[in-house]
Length: 316
Image (cartoon, rainbow, N blue to C red; front, side, top):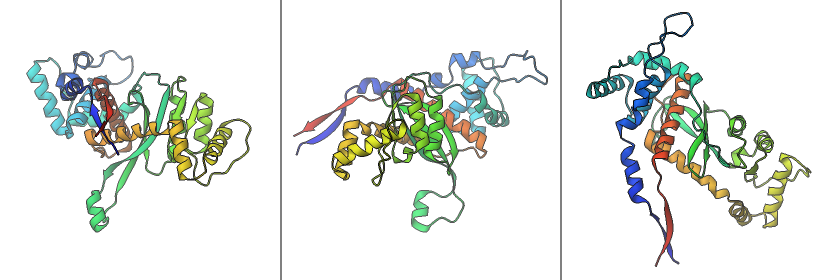
């Protein structure tokens, strides 16, 4: 049999994008400097804020990209301001930490794109606890706390469109339905694994007028519905039975429906954890939500810089 190899065809452009990821001017841009300080006249009681939300967001972006503790982040920003001879001040690490808690309320959308397809998935982000190797070798001896990051991405651009951080006990379909309500009406197809085979999620897809590409479980039964979300699930069950109802039949159904597009979200999760780490530095839940959002925003910016484009070639 011929061995298939994947080769990147735009290596020159992709290499430039990889170099650009570390550029200070990308994360500490002129636009962020212009919006650094808040307007002194807010019209509300109390002392006005010195630093704008954009300043705090910029600082947290730099922190996520360069993996800095809060105190080291302040020193890093001070050195940038000194080298660029800018007439701005840097907030203290306590100000950045305190403002990060309330920043989530004022954050904009992750993306303004209007995708036609959305792929849903979730992954765990560790807050604290032993590493995986220690647990596998000796078992866990301390509390291990995780949060669950839910995302919806555009498979064409691999850009994260929606995200939500929840407790580890929250179900994927439950949050997926809430995220889908915020999705643009341009969505025509929704992909998800078996965890999203829930009525609430399928009904929200039906409300959007989109097509669900979600495999039913092996023991799924037909409900004999004539319309609505359950009918589309019945159609999927009957189609799999028509292909034999076994594992081979499920593979054929997935291939015909283009279900393997969903694997792109696994690549996004891998990139998230490799580039930005699979742990959360913050300890309070509100700050963790802000940190997760910022990491998704960082990954989107890196994606927009350039992604590898390749093709499969048979090796003789």
